[in-house]
Amino acid sequence: MPALSTGPGSDTGLYELLAALPAQLQPHVDSQEDLTFLWDMFGEKSLHSLVKIYEKLHYYERQNPVPILHSAAALADDLAEELQNKPLNSEIRELLKLLSKPNVKALLSVHDTVAQKKYDPVLPPMPDDIDDEEDSVKIIRLVKNREPLGATIKKDEQTGAIVVARIMRGGAADRSGLIHVGDELREVNGIPVEDKKPEEIIQILAQSQGAITFKIIPSIKEETPSKEGKMFIKALFDYDPNEDKAIPCKEAGLSFKKGDILQIMSQDDAMWWQAKHEGDANPRAGLIPSKHFQERRLALRRPEIIVQPLKISNRKSYEETVECEEIKDADYAGNNSGTYLAGFRRSFRLSRKDKKTNKSMYECKKSDQYDTADVPTYEEVTPYRRQMNEKYRLVVLVGPVGVGLNELKRKLLISDTQHYGVTVPHTTRARRSQESDGVEYIFISKHLFETDVQNNKFIEYGEYKNNYYGTSIDSIRSVLAKNKVCLLDVQPHTVKHLRTLEFKPYVIFIKPPSIERLRETRKNAKIISSRDDQGTAKPFTEEDFEEMIKSAHIMESQYGHLFDKTIVNDDLTMAFKELKTTFDKLETETHWVPVSWLHS
Image (cartoon, rainbow, N blue to C red):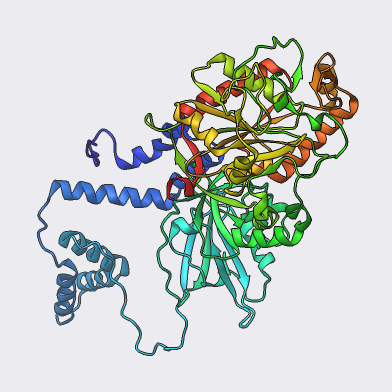
């Protein structure tokens, strides 16, 4: 960068450059608030004066003049002393009067300072009679503009003093480096605050614009400099500070939605962390409840929701679909071509009328206790991008029966059979004449199946008509080993057990549209049900639609924090297009994943 040319005769001085800077930066400034701040800052008269002085001194140094003498003030004093011993006439009296004037003495002192190139201010000596017990006071002047000051205050319960409780990272107070936690506030803009409540002081600050002057007594406690946080978390719940009665300062709070990525700037307070949205250009942090505090609140507030597993009606309905017994390849069949794909089966679904059916591999390990400890607050995450030599991430599809999940999966497989694959389920029933082992099913003995269940080799399993059916972990590994994207759909409570370093699952929730749209889009569609032994496809009923909406709501409320993407299957073509775009981005772009996946 070329050096600035300043002083008389130069093209552009520093003063002119600073004056023109706001206009030059205008196209690059996002908000009017920031632009107003720039104009106010560069329009300060004191800044103009300092810049002009700087330019004059800089020009003087460049000219490198040699002063005739360096001690004009001392020479004037010597002259005055010598004249005092002379006979006084009118000229001598006038000269003595002139040399004794403060402005002339100051001028000569400035001359000597410039001549000696010693520009540092000379501080007066400390008074001898200073009281050792007297508190040192700092006068601080900050330009607040329209942004919050970025500090909270509280009343000390023991002394009654108003002290700084918290400095928000990136705020005006933090950037100044002049105000610290524990500092005692005495005056704001000349107004004493000893007898005021914190709310009254906040009101004074809120009404103040431009420069604010504080008189404070510095805290004795030394603060260790805090570096900007490099910890990122994914929010697993929605948060609005205006609705939080516990937050110490609503104005300092940071609102966020489930799925947002937050950068943690400070964890100094065990109850309230400081954070900002990842990628936000605004450096100012906001308050959010800490993980420990939020977990404690949720555990006390919603124990019944956390402990209860996903429950849906036990009635005979489409929920009792035995799709693993059918070659049908869709939840609902409209203009379905009925194309048969070898090995295409929806992950294990069986009737709920038999309590032994449809079990997760972890249910035998008391998963209800596992659920109790799983309170969704935050999850530490890190950026991840799949490398060329890595296996593809497991893609898990979740959704209520009848939503069209299988049809979307079928369309994906047809679009590229070399790129996408599905698991082949295990069964203990006898192989039929038209079936091949390892294609429709992997046929094994009942004893071996039960042994694999005991060894937790199944993700989900169940029993139907005295035969076992299940989806194994090895069947997932088999698809991934072929360098294919494995498409798997399971019950939502199984998802968390698949979230491992090995699989790095990406979970997509297929959600039904409104019940009005269901009536419109599924009026000619059919659902495969086990209401009779043939498991024939029958038209949707109003009860089916209501159950689908209810089931989706329960899934989302209890397990939504595990979902990476939600796609509403309103129009099948549009839903498939969105699903395909999601898959393409998953393989080429950077995503946030649990930090444990990469640092296990």
